[in-house]
Image (cartoon, rainbow, N blue to C red):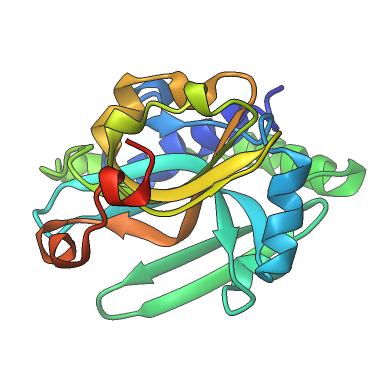
Length: 231
């Protein structure tokens, strides 16, 4: 439950937010979900599109200076280093203004990796080492925000379970007898406040490069629900 429910990743993201941005928070302060609702047709579609599905913890500084943070399943393309992270391996991608992008990968489970981490902590106690949260000391003014949009894939075994009024628009729609799915854009605050997308029989997966900060430029090519035939 801790792993597939997204709780482990959400707690790790909380720690990273403190180190990276000086934000002290709990997982219930941002959007998070696991992979429990991923269905076989979702995996089949991902393979057809040459995607893999990964549970990704994401934190990104928005153009307004606020911070977007969430943990959700995501379609990952072969060009993304996360695509090749499998089994007991974990990975971390960082990006900064001057240092650029860095990718770290290593085992996050198993007898020896776990023992090594525990031994490291015990050794640190011998010389009274404590983790430094320098960003907290500097009191950065960065705050969490849900004022952004996400491009999402939503599938269901019953179309009535999807609250279409919460979507800004729908880009793709496929309706089959026992499995329907769509690709659309949703405001993050509506995901945070609602739970329709967490119910049994519904899976929500982020599309590659999911964050959209401003939808105004997209409204030119917006497809209304009426034109999509799903209103």
